[in-house]
Length: 327
Image (cartoon, rainbow, N blue to C red; front, side):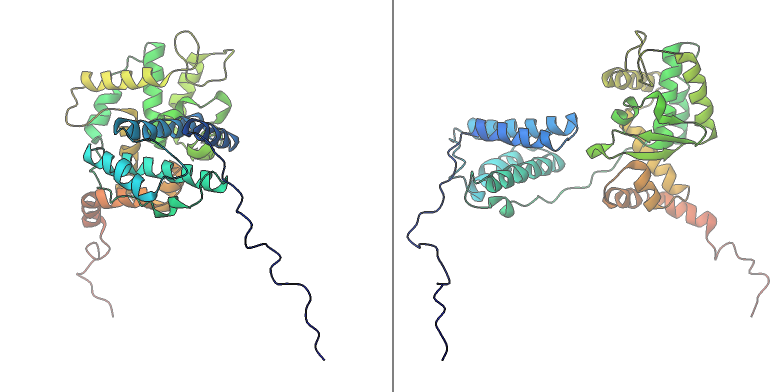
């Protein structure tokens, strides 16, 4: 005879109340969220982005005189009063999407910490982003730009070296200025980028011309107390604003028009010439430090005309000796 299992399938009292949610203000929730982000050892730039995104989120609701109650906030409210608000005010699609991503991670954190009851972050979707034409420098513009710094001065040689490195490696200006003397491996023909996006380190190759220029700059830099590779006239680490303004001024001196002359223009220019010179997208992805192939595929789409020109020159079929047929 079978005996009844005396243990009930559910020992939970159905009348028992669910654990109560944590009563918390937006300011308290934002503070907890940012502390959590800091614990992940994110870069200062990433932390600044998340903090600014939260401020913008709170400010958007305040501008519409809408009281923020995190426990009662719905995905529909966020879509209408936050995403819709940004669309109405003409913000760029990539800006809106970055803020939606930050919003999603914020509400995911609130859900996991039992501050809110529903996973409303799952209902937030990115908007369709327009693909803008990426501006790059022509070969003539690059040469004109590089001719502007006075290499008989320390600052001129320094700026020339930075522009050459940006063109050679496509690194971000923040990565370039974070370089230290020990990151320059001339014998290995490599640079170590320790402060890449997302704090991901990588190695990027450099070739003969850049090595010679770096050797010249390092000799002019001399022995210093700071480990920073690029320094100002006070022998302190060079600031981003300084080199941004200097490169912009060199662009004016070179008479370059129709394209924004900036450190980031070198990154796009490097990608363009790398592709049209026959480089593959997988290697380019590693050099540039992109986490996915999306951006490098976008480069290929944008520079397809250049690729067609290259193909016209080097087409295997067109370069066959058709005067002599083979079986």
